[in-house]
Image (spheres, rainbow, N blue to C red):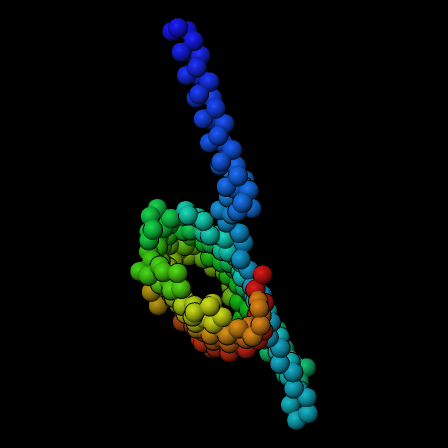
Length: 258
């Protein structure tokens, strides 16, 4: 009798296991979901947008101005990867008056909901400003003062090494880096505003410093397509010989999100 009871209990457990498995499988089948797709949904995706601006005049004035910008990022629970590139080219009566190319890459690693470290690489060429090249590489730390669904505000502090050639002068030095980023997306994500500022003072000579700032607004036109307008301002307190300290650029164009 003991042996029969043991067999009977094992059979009951086996049947219960089959019933539970069948019920779970049916539930996933009803919703069109399975465990594999659930895992795939959590995999972070790259989110990118490309913007294009173009101005052409003919007649009393003969000018051409072309701008392009590409940004992409991928966010997960612990890491954020961001990359971007932009360029400007312009002519006035056949004379080049704009010639710049810029790119950056940044990796943020989150230690908590608000605290993170970062590593950043930045490169710039501006023929009109006399910057043959400027490369900035360095680590730092950041903090989110606001981190909501539609609004983020963060600040960063760190150090970097600058390698540059202004005209015919090669130079390299250590710099501090202070930065701030703000973005707000309006309901439906069809419009947004953003603002960033970055200050790079030379570590042993605060008279040599660079300030980069941007402020912009974007409004949706149709799905994935929007109208974008922003102001870029770059101030170099010790510019290349014969150049002005400040360069201001207003860009209006079409942005495509993919």
